[in-house]
Length: 119
Image: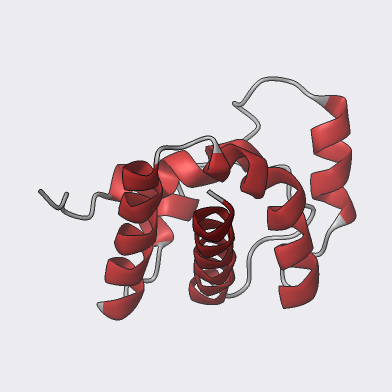
């Protein structure tokens, strides 16, 4: 049975970058070293921090994350409700929240496909 898109899934994905997440100096340094408004640097950040976390999820959980992102991008969501609920280590505010989420979706799709091929 397919799960419906839920906003808390998106907040959960981004919790990795939230200051409420456990204190980790190495992770904080990686986060602040990247420009979150640059697609290439943002993808690098996701590759370093998000990929291992995402691949620890079951295939169904990964698909739910991807489908949730696709749904909210597809309906034109601004993602204000996600970004207003987290305080990140990012040095700059995310200027284009939809672009940020689009880069995230591209990365998640890539990780999921690569893992499926290897599994």
